[in-house]
Length: 88
Image (cartoon, rainbow, N blue to C red; front, side, top):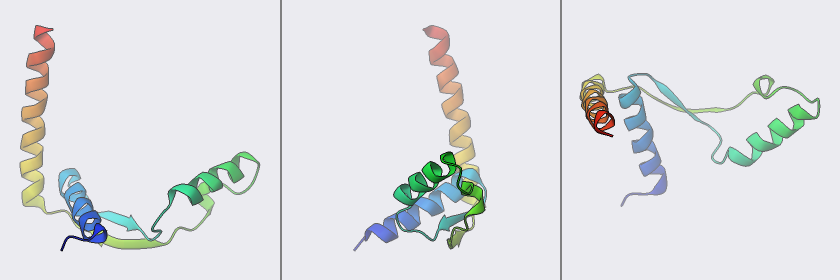
């Protein structure tokens, strides 16, 4: 069965391959609310968001063979976009 965590892990692995770079996941399961609170605190004169340590999660290394496929797909997409944009 595909659990939400497994889907997230697979999506993160795909992102690493698409970017061709390692990605380290956040160690915080839900970071939106704490991040917003830290930005508000910073705006009020508190510590900067960069000064607060964030726990790191699992690292993902890119699959470079898949990166090549994604890179080729991006080139095709750009060519298609240019063709369509010229006709508009």
